Length: 485
Image 1 (tube, rainbow, N blue to C red):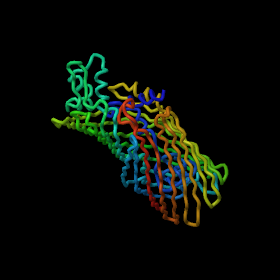
Image 2: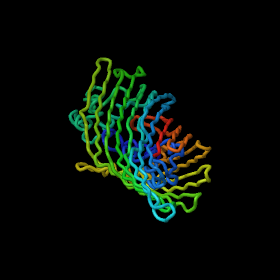
Image 3: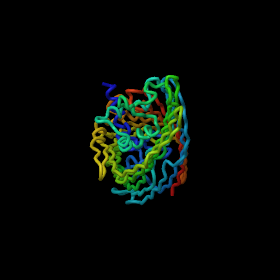
Image 4: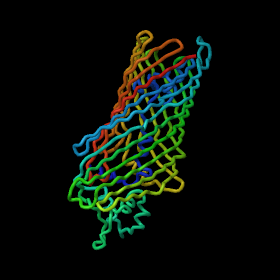
């Protein structure tokens, strides 16, 4: 049964790098909230704490706790390390990038006199919070003595009812199989009327490099209010902007004398995705006593009404007697994406003037994501999303302790597997440690955040190839500088 599920998982994305898949839906729905150094220092468990600009991305009621106006900026340095193990061959790659986690401005508007009941303050905030960072690179390499990518291509052609002519191959598979055919890496056996390739049983060194770039930056416009120092309410209009690029290079090199004519193949693929969405967040924080705060927030589904993919691919094949190259046409498609509803419950315990402990639980069901388009049906992809994904356990914890004007912080987050099966758990662990300094009109915070996730990656159909066991470690140093006025 597990074998069948593995094959189904792969086939859902087979030959569809350049069309919308369930994996695309998960990529843009699974959010790891970044934000300010203080926000990260508490593991993102800010739903009941408030008083930080980044909290408007999770619970906008946190804006109601502001008692002064504020400007913050949070640059970061991120170090990504990837480790792969394919057929007992290990490789490591790393990547560095810098950017901005958040940039925010809060205006405090006084309410009624503090001695009276009623609204005691109103705040307006706007700026940018980073939700996802896609910058990464992984290199995988190993020996395969069972098959070639071309083995899969040949089986697809030979198992197509009625067969396929060369023109039909170019029409139906212009971004992959047609490139191999036009490079003479696949050929037709005119005697047996079957397509063949020169390395059906492998004997190859296979490698793949995947480089991803981009982010989801959300531009937030928020309003928060303080009612009688007991109830804090807030609302955020979020405009997330997706920018994603993926570049892959797949190679096969002859490693066995039983392979007669084939020498090497290089297959390059490029994908770029852009989109802008909109959502609404509503939250509250209730303080039944001075030592405890209870928070709750709901996020409407995000609707991306103008998603656009652009893609292309090219292939070079080297045989004993010739070297050929072929390129695909340029592909482009416009569509819409809706990501899931979210709900966040949180609690914070305030330990006098010494510190606090906070925790929160996030509910999100990734099977609720869906695609749509004016000129295409996504019924199969949307059904695959519903069958593949689930609601995982997402929890975050944090603590902060005060030593005069200094702060010490620590946090932990666990993001459970979004998959219904156990094929590829993709669990994510986040740990952080940080410090801060507070003055009357100035503050600075710094946090180191460590993230780990694992996956089993298949170069092609799992019936022919073993997975590369990949581990990703990310270390992020974020510094936040803030001015109060």
